[in-house]
Image (tube, rainbow, N blue to C red; front, side, top):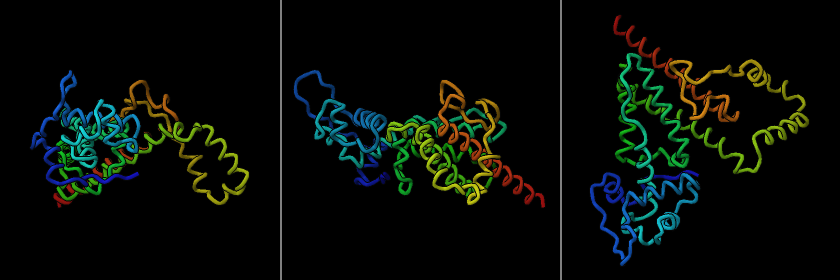
Length: 285
């Protein structure tokens, strides 16, 4: 399920995102009910999406969570399209915009990647919002500005930094999507990873007895490419594992996704270092 942001009225959406206009208060009758606000509506909508997924999001569902009718929300937020933009930008406020100074440009970049990975895992519905059309909100821009500043420390030209931004975000998002999918697969399908693999491995062995001969490179990779233990905190490119334990405490699919992310990010950072070295060599010619 892919959702496109920015489908509401442009001026109204941006006014709400940047709080350039204050929405008129809702008229309420006597009683202790608190007045609604944009922030309260957005917080309730985020809670719905976090707990039940994007498919469950509706103005009615948000109203129910707040104890109001859907119609009561429209005074503050024109519709679901504008609400989605507000939700997307609001959760980005969780991301740090500053990192401790370091003589090694890799350290804050690695920390940034880890923070963003966990952010997407906390809010997997964010990954369903297409990147083809950005929300253009203040917190989304703050996250982008942070990454640009961190990449600027590499000394690479602006054109290269621009393309690296377009490389890093998909790397983080793809890994986070795999982690999030791994976490919900058992509940969504009714079978555990162990049950799923056991059933299909047995069937594949029976139905394709010449599998190893047909796909020797895959077999060789499985045999020779098994990951070595990499405890959290073991190096400058190590990414944090979830609170409560290291990689050995995680189910296999999530552990593989996180290790793939760690290795992929490390190779990408090595490539950045190579580009920096090549730039220095060119300047010295």
